[in-house]
Length: 75
Image (cartoon, rainbow, N blue to C red):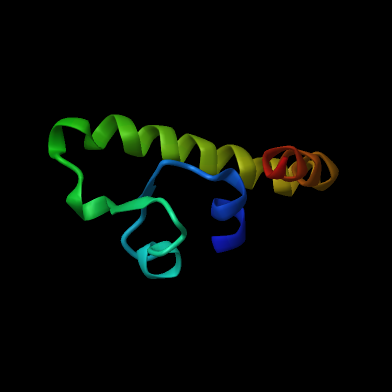
């Protein structure tokens, strides 16, 4: 997880509270989910959940494409 985040070189990372400890010092501003203002929380979490679901389904149905997507993200 940490390696993937570092490869993407994001400016800001919105992290699930349970994952915050794993990526809190990746060189980007890491914001735990609990700190997000309620005004923005729903939209941000929908985006994150949709991405996570996309990769979960992709891994289950087409592992080869999953690996290709991850390699593309690392570039």
